[in-house]
Length: 299
Image (cartoon, rainbow, N blue to C red; front, side, top):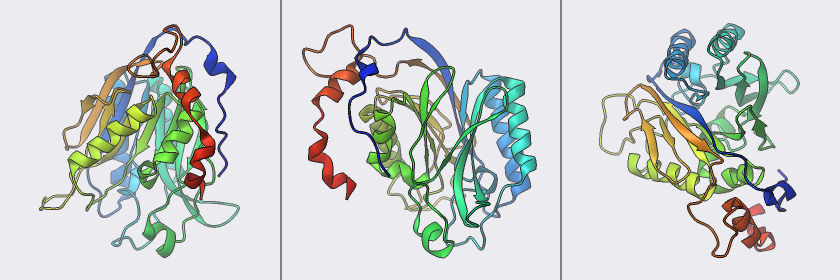
């Protein structure tokens, strides 16, 4: 994985005029049986609910048709069917929104399975895809999933955004790589983490990714399967602004969270003293960076 750490010349320009979009995050009902039909219905209902609230971009959780990333209870890799993809594409077209649809698929060239996020645009077209780069232990060792080797940024009609799947979000360098490529929004397609230390820590992690990368975050997941017991992390869907403030939250229940956010996301909330007020504070932060000191991050 190679990331260009140099400061891009276009960041020296004045920031674009502010614009407002609506981000949609989702908390789907638990799907422990990995029922693809039930999962498809839940996904379609969530997209429709976000559309009703005016969402421009909807982020769904990892392996959204089949209950999340593979774990100790999984017996096989649940591969999504083309029917489900066509339905989601139709919803994007009908509601003029973008959707991040994470699924498992089998790579037709290598024969190995992958966790991939498919990106559909407002016309219902497949506009891009991202293959998960950081696999959990079960995906890597028991099911031999193939990791991706790129962290792309996608250009939409409203700006640039990046995608992160499951474990990717736990790696701070992944979000930073997207920031360095100009991403203003991070979509985190989360997955059940039953023994993550706490819901509070998960929410703090989401806010810190937003603040560190001058980016709004749409974070989606699955409701924690009842009954709750001590040590079981509650999960939610939420939209977090670049300042780290939670703008909308499903409150640990199935539902959708939609909130307006302003782009550019990195407008003035912190930065270097002496930075010109007319410039994006992203630039002053980048000018302070000394990438040669970060070699340990790449080893």
